[in-house]
Length: 339
Image (cartoon, rainbow, N blue to C red; front, side, top):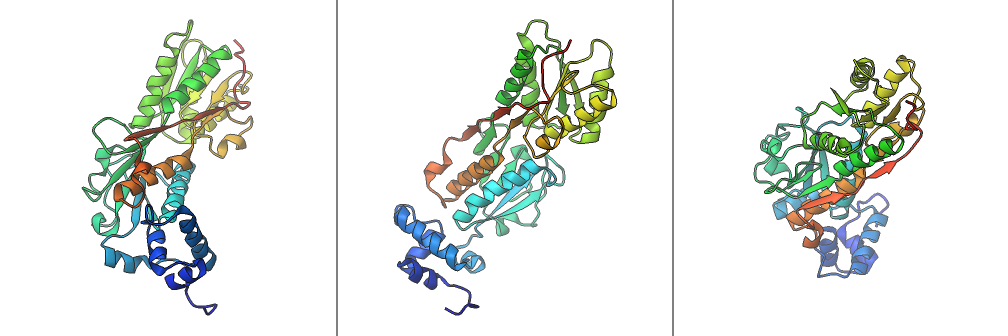
């Protein structure tokens, strides 16, 4: 093969010591039950070494589908959604699929069809942190998988994070440090994930003696969070000793508010976040937060969609609702209550 020639499936078959039919089955994601895992691995290794890429356009015309999934997210500017995309794209690539990332112009919905006719351009949809009915404008009837969304039955397969447990973990951590005046800096976004967080916060403090929970809502932006934190810290009554924030971005705003008011974190005010973005360790002090397995969410969502499309084993679909655990990461922005 010439160094400049594009490798073909025949080249891959020769390198792997198998037939072209076997190469087609493996790279087309149809090998399960027909080809051994060892042989499939050999074919993928040979294809990767040769730099082989299937002609997806020709395959789409031949098979009547595009081998492309659409991932709809509320925003492209948030690190979490970039990590979700990375997880989904990694699994998709293993099965010869591509992923198109699309930010809904309306945030949590309703989302408009970015193609004019999504059914002609994509095979299925994965939507993160949105409501299923917000996707009605995109290729009605296409296979759909939801991420971090209301798992109410009936509905499409859903991959969720244990966000309620994450809030409980943070609340218990703050209570164990002696905090009772805890204010929830809540994202002013009407979506399932943020409603669940608010409910979990109230429930976690319901049985704590002397607890004085508060709440202040704001947009998902540092400046908005700073202003909301100032309101919470300067309002009537005893000042909160801890701010539990719906995201690391909001926590960054809370830290700015504390600094502006002459309060030390954590000596005078404990601050916690949610996400464990890169920002969490860029702050000083570093942020106590909840780590969300964003890549795992994207990967699980893509596996569920591939199973619906028949491009992966049905066992990969799992339960209709999958919940992935989250992890409290304690750093130096939280400390014992000072009063």
